[in-house]
Length: 161
Image (cartoon, rainbow, N blue to C red; front, side, top):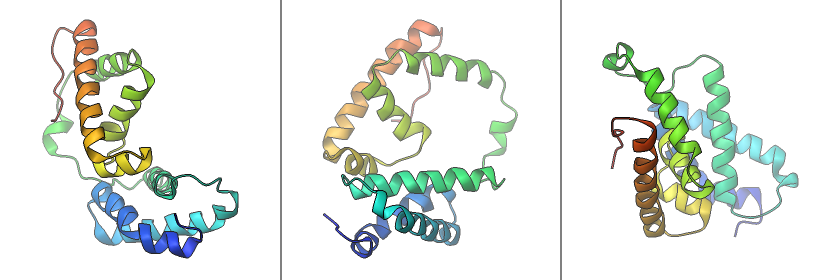
């Protein structure tokens, strides 16, 4: 386990930068945001309570992304076909209702994967388990979500596998 911020930087730079690159689709912006992430981690290091440093750093990176989004930059370009679709608001409400009915662990796993964009490896690091265990848990969470969604909707959801 990393005991200094320098060790954290050396061992987790790739993870943080990779996460931000996937979310922004811009390597230079991702590197800038990763630098901001480690700057904030350095400032908050004395208040860190221990635990998984990768989970702590990815949470900071997520907050940096949120702050960047609030500045008005669109991080991942949307396809033109998404802009004209109808019924998205209704389906969004149904998805949120189905998620709310799930137990906390599967709900959080689906949120991390689909809403927050973390990879299986990143979720495994945050939870302290293996990628295989996360794959299995995510498969079960998707099955539970499909069952709940079928209860609140007439159509099955479109979920990426």
